[in-house]
Image 1: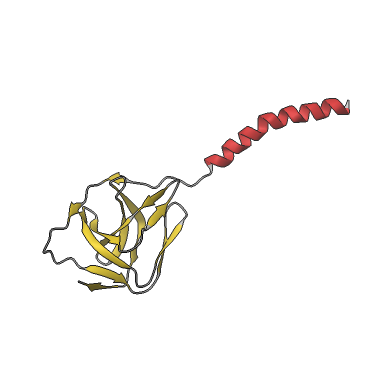
Image 2 (image 1 turned 180 degrees about the horizontal axis):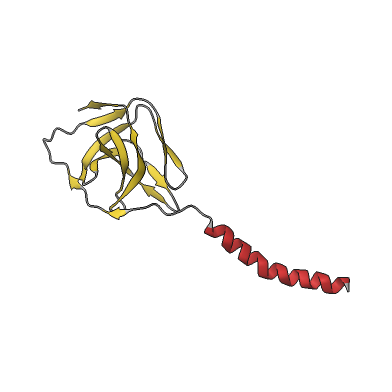
Length: 139
């Protein structure tokens, strides 16, 4: 009889193990919320200037991940989306993460980070709470 119990347990393990894995995988990070958005490129001779982040800023993403904008990081203006001005990092790549990792540019409005422009997908990803930034401007 102990042999039968072991055999029954093995059969149950073959049934429950894939089910448990499926449940665990469904608990993975959510996708980043996005909406299609096209950047209106900055025109030469505009007054937009590069910005330099003065103090490090930790950004809590809606996906549960966080990202840090390092102090002294420089961001160059790219253009505008309806939600605000778009800035890309200089000398590095900035990413945001959900179920996937996406290259991201900052979208600023009234000196606050309101979301990200994802250039690879041409999408805008909003933050649920805008993050005030302290930065200086340069040519």
